[in-house]
Amino acid sequence: MDKTSLQYDKVIEICRGVFAKKMTDYGIAWRILRPSSMTDQIYIKAQRIRSIEEKGAQQVDDDIRSEFIGIINYCSMGLIQLELGPSESEDLSKEETIERYLQNLKTAKELMLRKNHDYGEAWRNMRISSYTDLILMKLKRTKQIEDNSGKTVASEGIDANYLDMINYAVFAMIKIEFGDE
Image (tube, rainbow, N blue to C red; front, side, top):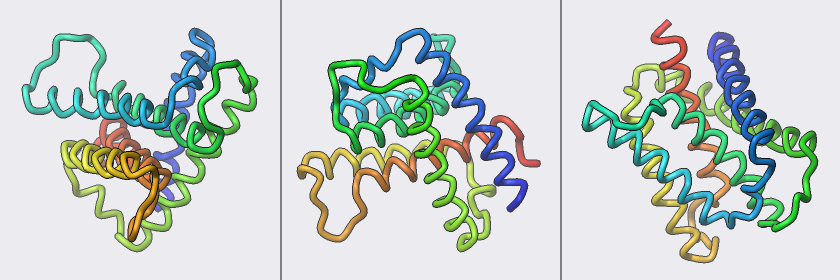
């Protein structure tokens, strides 16, 4: 599991680098999005991955790897939106934004380590396309919870689904970055 922890950290460092660069370009314009809009942004990325997987070709340069990075980053932003709500102003400094972003990814990693202990790294024997499908399933669940005004009867909430999507996308990234080593 030490290997998984190190690989996870390397993937998060890649994602953080993209997040920081985009924040330099765009600021925190995403803070205006409602959580449901964030969910739809994640859906667009996951659906594009599935489309490329099924067609075996793409016409836009952004590859599957960059879409998984986007899913990880949008899920962390979605968690920030769930906690703080949307804002029309630049209400977070760059430092506070990065801190919140990284805290969400730390929470996701802690969850992954607990589940990984129980499941014995079964994810390593899965196909990347299965992670895509699981992310799409979690998105359908999230949309249903959002349509129910965030209320659940027997299920975890939107935040738990975002955390699971982060971990599925990290697993895909580990396979993309490191193969089956």
